[in-house]
Image (tube, rainbow, N blue to C red):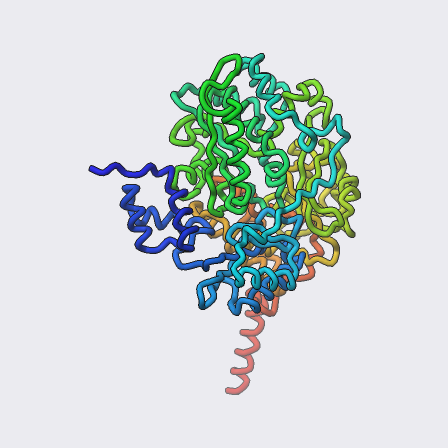
Amino acid sequence: MKATANRNNLMSVLWDIQVKKSCISHDDTTKIAHEFGISRMEVEGVITFYHFFHKTFAGKYTIYLNSSIIAKYSGMEAIKKTFENTLGISVGQVTSDKMFGLYETACIGLSDQEPACLINFKPFVNLTPEKVEEIISEIKKGKKPKDICDIPKSKIQYTPTKDRTVFFKTHNTFHSLKQLKAHSPDQIIELVKRSNLAGRGGAFFPTGFKWELCSKNKSDIKYVICNADEGEPGTFKDRVLMEEHPELMIEGMIIAAYAIGASKGAIYLRAEYRYLKNNLEKLLDSYRRKGFLGENIEAKQAFNFDIFIHLGAGAYICGEETALIHSMEGKRGEPGNKITFPVEKGFMGKPTLVNNVETLSAVPSILQMGVDKWLQLGTEKTRGTKLISVSGDCKKPGIYEIEWGMKISKFLTLIEAENPHFILFNGFSGECLSPHDFDREISGENLLLTDIEFDPKKPIDYKYKMAAVGVRSGGSFMTFNKDRDILDIVKNVSDFFVAESCGICVPCRTGNFLLNKKIDKIIFGHAELKDAVDIKNWSQVIKTTSRCGLGQMSSNLLNDAMKKFPEVFIKRLSDNTDFNKAFNLDKAAEEYDQIINEISSDYE
């Protein structure tokens, strides 16, 4: 009996076929199902889950345009129109000669260099209509995208003083790994715990504690996974780290593996960063040649560990650790129930440590500078520095490494924000900030504002009290001036969550769709005050019943905007609109009596 293929390789096989044929056909699906010993429906389920797998031919050269709000305000519509006019097709279509396919996708991690696009996953940035015409002309003449694409330049706009910078400075490659000779695995964990390093992917879970939990779970094999699926719109800090200092990420993974007893590691790289894959592979080879990857790695307790790269295929939800693990296992990237956590049962049912790029990159820096020095950075409760991706209406978009505790007002000056009025803080799943928030500090703590009690008769008249408290930063900062339409931004965010919901939770799948329709009603001036009440109540249902962060955070911006910019919504709401008149019993009875009286008078 023929042995079936390892399902962990399913994504790689799908990618091979997609790249070679520009689609995964019906016959391909049948053959894959046979090779892996699974049903066609399972394979179909995986293919259709991801944005970048196509069942029909997607063009010899497949173009993806960023459709996020930053791209839109950077001139994306003009770029899209130029592509359409030059190619003679609309978005979602393929040219008659099958040469080009044109598609939109969510943020491609280049918000500081928009308008941008990917052509066969090669980046083209700072696009103009003229540049688009030139690119298409060159490809038609036989040039390959890899030969004419741009190499995105990392815009590192600010770092602290040299002695207080953690990430963007000169690093002694391999130096942190040599310290493993002097420390046992338990001692490494204690050092990380002492640093109070918290996860930088948004959850802020204590890193050392997470490592300790994984180390205590005994198993014949353990895994370390670097979450490089940086899909939050407006965020590109991990991309820049992998461009500028990928050695930090790799050394962080090696240190983590030593600490928890892992023998295998994986970098889950988002498909939009596929152009970074070759350089990462070469760097991994250099670590193998130096004896820092492979068998019998020198340390106080010698160990075996190696790293491979797993390529994602376009699914925002795979940034959630259980969804990411399912994706690596060749399944739909749907979040799992938290019956057990990955540190207990993760990839292939084995104890698995999942940290993001920034978190892992901080560890070797901490070991090099020393924990005592690290603890002098930031604030008393939040130590170290934070990377922030900046885009939008400012003169200096790019990456900023700041110490925790900087005020929003100072940060706005630093980035040279242009008439800042509305800020998307922490990406689409974060919160919005108004000028009332500008005295708050960028913090690693979860300090929230206190509102007056919600009044259903005044659903968006909060008059909340403002306090100078911290605002937790996950890493994205999008600033918009007064000329931007707040409802336009809110709609773009809502469209994103409708498209990216995996659909496994009914409240998230249906609730976000219904909230999106409520936003449409508000935009067109057809909404009533009752719609604002519905938004508040439905959002609470979605937040409390969704199994992962997408549903739990998807309505944050909408509710924040209603709270902090009530005037935008109030002027578009009424008690009883002409579009959808509310039933009024007294008025109906009055009209009924009038009609009866008129009829009676006719018979008198």
